[in-house]
Length: 139
Image (cartoon, rainbow, N blue to C red):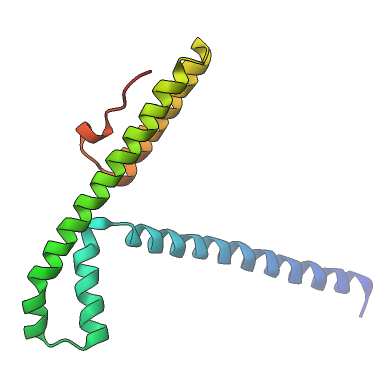
């Protein structure tokens, strides 16, 4: 085997390895994004609970029909808990920002407002909460 062929084979193996790594990272990223976005959709919690219980307990359609109202009520309660917790977290952070603002320069307060705005946009995009919940007090 001559030297040129040996280098071509090495370059080919490296190219295939890199292409596999890039493909794996891309497909893994798509899978992770799909998995995490699906997992963090609170509006689907009731359906996921029903399906999981149906499958794991081998429930009959009649049993699923009987427990569905219980699961639906639980899902509503869990959404309310999640909403209340998110509101409390937001209020706590907003209060901390108000308290910090008195110790900041005008430039720092402006940057803090930019951080709040970026966070507000992220919350609107990610959680679709109501405008009343997303109102951020200014320092």
